[in-house]
Length: 372
Image (cartoon, rainbow, N blue to C red; front, top):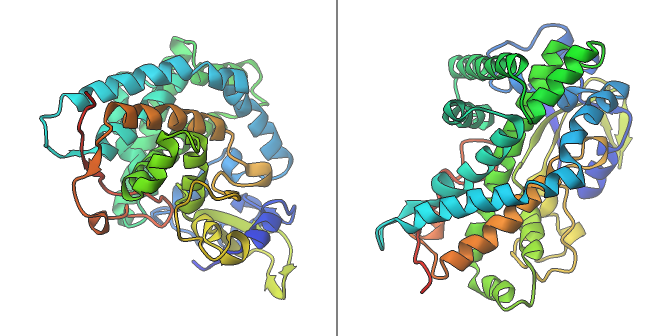
């Protein structure tokens, strides 16, 4: 499969708001329509799901309105006490690590925090959360075999169907129950497939992106002590850390797929009708013509920290405020609890996750030293 990778900030902004660009393969991707994409293609689920991620036009508006109720400013802020408590519990566990013993901070902190937050928001039971993390990681792993891709899809749908069945029988105060009510009270608003796929989107996207944001923010501060000092002395804020991290190392490096509804000409380049498009968010954040010649430098004092890491236009991430809230609570709490936090390996030994979509580390080994 061949696709255009858009690496220019200006061009990507134009394309993300252009009505001639769709995310619906059923209408606008000839290879999908003609049955040329096999079910065991590792990126199949990124295309096959039926939710607002792959919707176009009025269908996208309809589905987005239902989901956006979970991420209003009030509902997002209401999660603050829960996030603070989860953070405190995880930091307590880290503090119990024997002195000097390395711990994988991605596994012990960056991953469990967002999976716990999003699981509680959508009512995912405790016994399903480990499996949910496993399959979510599999969705973002673009090196898995076709056989493994099929297993990931099977297990993911099994978890989601079990969740929907459970909440349909015993509704709770959670977003899954709210979406089921919308579906069952007015079936024309949300089909069963859209219901399940919408929950898949919100749970997996709300998990992986926040993991990578925390991962890279921690790494950036540990490898740039001068920047950590700026925030510790109050010269710059944790918001500055978060926004510069999003620019410097977007949680999603490349996002598939969009499709040209008609021929599109931009700056002398023609994307023909039906051709696929990948949004290259990581490249956009390092574009010298837009950010300046020092784009590769992590600098929380940078005046222009604009980025597209949460998207742009109609498909802008509805959970961006929740991700920022989680990071805004977790990061200062971590560095306050462990003022001498340090990497346990040289930075060059950190390995990227096996994905051209997700942007994070396979592990983040650190030594935690509690404050006195």
